[in-house]
Amino acid sequence: MNWRKIRIIAWKDILEVRQNKSVLISMVMVPLIIMVVLPAVMLVVVNTTGSADALNDPDIQMMFERIPPSIAQMLGNLNDAQLSVAMILGFLFAPMFLIMPLMLSSSIAAESFAGERERKTLEALLYTAATDTELFIGKALAAFVPAVLVSLVSFIVYTVVLNVGGYPLFGYVWFPLDTWYPLVFWVMPAFSALGVGATVLISAKVQTFMGAYQASGSLVILVLGLVVGQASGLIYLSVWVGMILGFVVWLAAGVLFFLAIQQFNRKTLLYQSAH
Amino acid sequence: MEKIIEVSRLQHKYGDFQAIQELSFDVQQGEVFGLLGPNGAGKTTTVRLLNGMFEASGGSISVMGFDPMKSGEKIREKAGVLTETPALYERLTARQNLRFFGVLAGMDDQQIERRSDELLEMFDLSPRADDRAGTFSKGMKQRLALSRAWLTNPKLLFLDEPTSGLDPEAAAQVRELIADVRQKEGTTVLICTHNLDEAQRLCDRLLIMRQGSTLAIGTLSELRKLVSPGMWLEVQLLSPFEKMDQIRAIAGVLSLDVHSLQEVKIEVDSEAAIPQVVSGLVALGALILRLQPQEIPLEQVYLQLQNSNHKSNNGHNGGTK
Image (cartoon, rainbow over all chains, first blue to last red; front, side):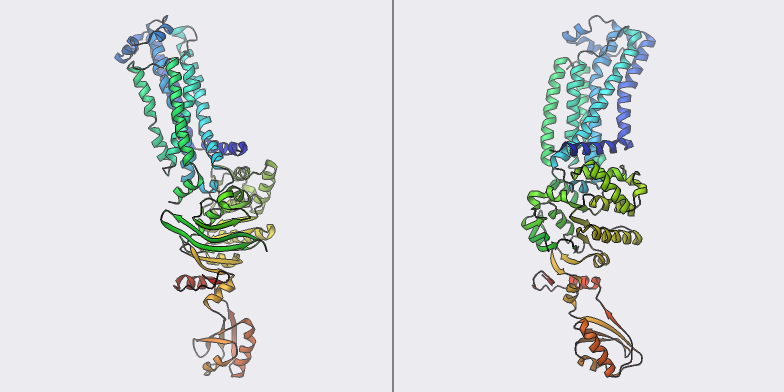
């Protein structure tokens, strides 16, 4: 395996993504809305009213009632307003953070695989001396690395927003909570890999970037499931739940990658293009 | 002369559809070999098979000594390919496009830089080297795609419809470049085309394909002989000539096509017969105003071969199959 070839394939795809406005906008807007605008609005509301009443919602009340003992212990010393903010921005928002790696890796992978066919550049690429494995790894890395990096940067920005915005309320650096570490360093890369694997598989079947992007977008349902699970008190992203969730997603990503590699050979790709 | 491509009884199927059947030909080092045929004749499929992109369902192929089914990667490293569309990365500059394909071909950075400068200069793209390929005209894109195909100094170059979609001026420029660069670098070139004018200008030998099989193969003059064994002379006479029938008796004359008493086309068996025909006409009292040998254009050869249902079995070289 030639890493120089893999690097140039990834470099080319990332360079193309940087110049593709639709992908670039989603790379900026999604993190901006989820990780900056929404938490900032909430913090402004709480800081302005200075009361948890502003967040008086039956769903949140149900969450409070069903907090597992380990998490209750972590949040034991907080007053009502602090508890509301910690529950919503520290727990309820956690699955929202996972939307980013999924969406970003899917959009870049769709651009990279199906986009290549759409722009009729696939055949020239397949005529090169790069092996099928080098092509696959180069393209997968081009989607995986930016998705992970942007998610990490978003996490840092989120941390800053929560601590700066939450300072009047908490008076100290309260975020990140312990539950976020497995989420950021274990579950988030797994979701990025899942997004890439699924999109590569879908890209082999559809002819256009939008087709691949839309089909792989259905993965967001997984994340919404987590949001609902937490809101209903069915599941909490504690450290252990995060570790297990990460393991399951990595496993699923591994299976998708295995299937994708089976499909990713120039003969199949060219045959599909020819028909 | 060394054979750079050898194809014997090649077969390929797309599902149940037999795309290539019993195709046999060889390409000598340094020659420009043309694959001619209508859309769907199997030209592009043949190029893909030669590069190991598809697996043949029968027959054997050797390209530069490699079997594409086992060593397609080695062939792709040593050969250059121009696909039917320029297939450039439009968001990358001309230089970035060349760098990308150079690295994938296994060239080092210095080689890529030196060769890119050389080719961009040769293909008149130097002033736009750092502009995005997406801002180029069709002709410029095709020239950049040709530079990419020539980047590795390939021993063998595959060109699939190199002037397709270009305006006449750009097409002529591309044709001129192919001829020039081929002469300078001694590259063996295999061209797929249905542009007969282009094939006539560029190719040393031609393979005419129909429905995935060989219709005829040979040099242009060999192919001409398949549709007409001799050559034609167009004769204009100063005054009406009544003894047209007697022309047939002149040695070397095969047939006549009388247009009027002052205009006649005479088919002779070879170029050597022309002086005899001239002296024969003079001896018969004809006053020759103009006599012009006429070569059958490739278009006529091609159309007659494609339209004929008759297939003889005269072997592959210089004959129909």
